[in-house]
Image (cartoon, rainbow, N blue to C red):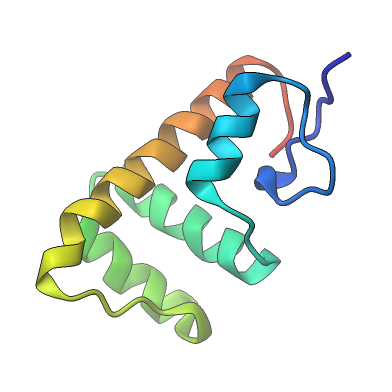
Length: 98
C-alpha cells in the first residue's frame, strides 16, 4: 500500500513507488523552513510571477532561507521550481498530502 502522506518528500520512509523515489532524488530532503520557502516560491510562480520576482518575493518572506543565485543559476532554479509546482499538482490529483 502506498502512503498518502508525502510530507513534501521530507520523510523517513517514502511511498513504495518509482515516481516518488525519483521525485525525492530531484527535490531532496528539506527542512520545514526550506519547504515553506519553496511553497512560497511556487505560490508566487502560480500567481504569474517569473522566477526572479518569485525568488525576490520569497526572500522577503523568508530571509533566513533567501536564495542569492548567480546569473547562470536562474534557468536551473526555474526548472526546479517548475518541477516542484508540477509535483504538487500530481500530489493533489492523487489526494495525497504534501
